[in-house]
Every structure is written in C-alpha cells, then in structure tokens.
Amino acid sequence: MRPFSKRIKSNILFLILSLLIFSTSKIIAEIDIVDRINNLIETTTGKINADVPIVKALKDEPKKKKEWTLMIYISADNDLRNFAIRNIKQMAKIGSNKYINILVHLDIKLAGNKKATRRYYIKQNQILHLNAEDPHSQRMDSGNPETLISFCRWGTRNFPANHYGLILWDHGTGALDPNRGRIIKLSDLFKFNPLINKVEVDRSIGFFDLLNATQMENRGICWDDTTGNYLTGQNLDYALKKIKAEIGKDLDFVGFDACLMQMIEVANTVKKYSNIMIGSQEVILGTGWNYVEVLRPFQKGSLSAEDFSKHIVSSYKKAYEKITNDFTLSALRLEYIDLLEKNIDNVSKLLIACLKRQVSRSVKKAISTSRSKILCTHFDEPSFIDLHHFYLNLLATLKHFKLKNKTEETTYKKELSKELIEGCGLIEELSLANVSGKNLSQAKGISIYFPPRRIYYSYRDLDFCKSNNWILLLTQYLNV
Image 1 (tube, helix red, strand yellow):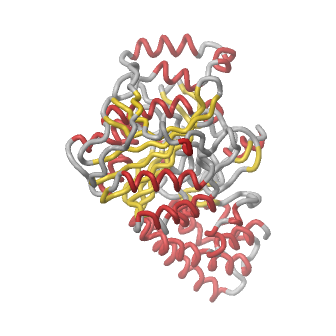
Image 2 (cartoon, rainbow, N blue to C red):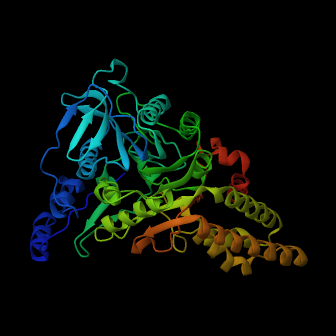
Image 3 (cartoon, rainbow, N blue to C red):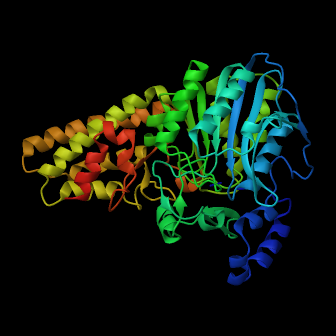
C-alpha cells in the first residue's frame, strides 16, 4: 500500500481544518483517509493540477544508448489508479533526457470500467504513448509474469543503456501470498493523529488478520483486478530470470514501490538477478515514492547504481518524515545475502539444538521474549520482524538459556553469541542505505517472518524455506 505528501502552509489553518474534519466519529468514518490527507498536506513539489499531454507516437524514440533506462511496471488495475496517474505526472516533471530513459508500463481501468494497457516514454511535460498501434499490448494482465517479461524485453531492446533499473509498483504482501478477499484500502491501514499532525499505522489489527477478517482475495504483488492474477514469489523468480537472460547481465537494481517487501525471503529470489534491492519493511502510503525527487539528480548528470539507490532512499525520507513516524525504506547490497542466509541457517541450527536440550522451556521463553511485539521492531504485519533487532534481543537473553548439560550450555551460548554478532555485522554491511521513522528507529533494513502461533500456508513453498533451517526452527519453536 502506499500516501500523499502535501505540506501545510499555515498551522492555524491546519488546526481549524482538523477540528472541522475530525469533530465526530461519524465524519471520520465517512471520509476516506486518502481524501483527508490529500486535502491537508501539500506535496513538497507543489500541487499537480495541470494535465500533462499524452501524445500518440507512431515509433519509439531513437535507440541511442544512454547511461540509464528506468522501467516502472505500474499495476493499477485496482484501487491505486489515482495514485498511478499522480506518480506518472511526477515523472513528467523531470522527464527523460540524455542521461536516462524513463519507461512506464501501465495496467489500469479507464472510464466505464474498461481495462487498458499503456506503454509510455516519459518526456519533460509530455508523455509519449508508444503502444497505441500495437494490437498485442492493449489489454494485458499485470499479474502474468509474461507481461512483465514483455515490458522489459521491449524496454531494453528499444532503449539500450549501460544501467537498468526495474521498479514494481503496486500493493505488496512481502513473503506471504494471501488466499482470499479484496484489496485493502489505505483507510484500513492508516489513521490520522491530529495531536501530532501525522499519519500513523493502525496497529490494532495485523495486516494478515485484516486480510482474513475482510475475506480478501489472492494478492502478492502486481495485482490485476480484472483477471484476479498477481505475481507470486515463483512468478517473480521466473520473470526476473527471463529478464536477466534478455539483457545478458544482472539488473542494477530492483525496487518495490509496494508494502512489506524488504524481507530476506524476497531477497532470496531477487539476489539471483539484481545487484541491489530497494524496498520497505513497513506498509507504504498510497502516493508511494516521490518521483520528482527520485529523478531530480538526472537534471544535472548521471549516477552510479549505488548512488542512485542511496538517493531513492534519502528522497523517500524527505517525502515522508514530516507526514508519518511509521516509514521505512532501504537499499540492500545483494552480494551479501548468501552470507546472511548462511548465518541465519547457522543460528537456526543452534537454536533448534538448544530447544531440544532446554530445561523448563527456558530457551523458548527467551526466543519468545526476543521476538515479542513489546521488545522487537515489527511492522503492520506483526509476524514480519526486524532481523537485526531480533538478533540483538537474542544476544541479551542468551543468559536465560538453561540446558540439561552445563558443558553443552556453555558451548552453545558461545557459538550463538558469535553467530548473532556476525549476523548483525552482515546486516549493517549489506545495508547500502536505510531510513526509518521515529516509531521504527531500530529497523535496520531487512525483515524476516516469525509467526507467534502458526506458520502461514504459503510460506513453506518459498525457495528460502527449501534451503534454510529457519523453517525448521519455526516448526520446532511452535511445537515445544
């Protein structure tokens, strides 16, 4: 999910509007949070009132090789339609130039509930509609991996570059694939707190509990309302594999302008096809990334992949730090993910051994304390916890481990301490950039799934679970 940055020019006016809008619970219930925030907060770049002209182009731009081609795959055949239009207009504030090609694949519903697919080349203050004469790409399925492959094939062949970035824009559910219901509205996830003049995540109900309570439909990322399809982890793996083969090398980065995607389980897939992964551990407000700020450096020159990724993260902080204390965004160096996964595997094996040898459930109690909502940073889906914070908590609770054999107890504590310290160091090393709001100040850029009661049905199907003892640790922990 994702909001809306708009800045108030007068605190007095803001307070008056707040009192008028929030005076009764009935009014609050009737006014969607999207409208409330859009009415009260101005974007840092100003309101986007004027329409950007869309021009049908009979042929693509010249195939001159540039430094960057940025491909934004927007799945807006759902409740995010208006935010997609807003973001595309933001892109056109900067536009393609001699340093960068900005390409958009847009799946959306038009007036009359008509499904349409558009492929755009974004110029400054102008949008070129490039697939107007292509009968094969007028009505595509954003939830079909072949659609994503087709877009990237078209983009890289027609707009060659030294660097390629891919952004997946939509709702997101991290490592899990829900199996029923409807798309969550932003108003289901956020509430506005007039006392601090900021938006807050509503943590009274977990993300997946809300999905189940509202009987929601299947949804992973790149959801298509018309077809009911979405990209599962397996779909994404398949698509990225084909895209890498098409360009003959790794993508420079894969970015998720979507909720909850910055997880070790997702990185396990993306690491094979990209050098950097950019995403949020927390839910994202509807307006998503501020693409004026994201693209602004290209008005003066080009950026390296690392500098571009760092800038995306810093621009996100700039957009949201005055709006909410519940935000995160990080960029991860994927070359270190294998080392971190090995570390998680080692920690899992040691904890399993300790659980089997524990006295009076001492190990389970210590683990439970370490991952608890009170002590460990968690997100709108409370089973998604910050891995670094969990490791730090485990280090602090190792003293409570009691094993049947005292010699083994000493050995296991020493080995666990070594692995946990090493793991924290790896997380800090792989984090190229990381920002977070005050409510999530100990979020260090990467989450892991740790349910308090039972393992979600789709989790065991992940490749991460097929090669890592973490799933065995969860099973052991939940059954002792």
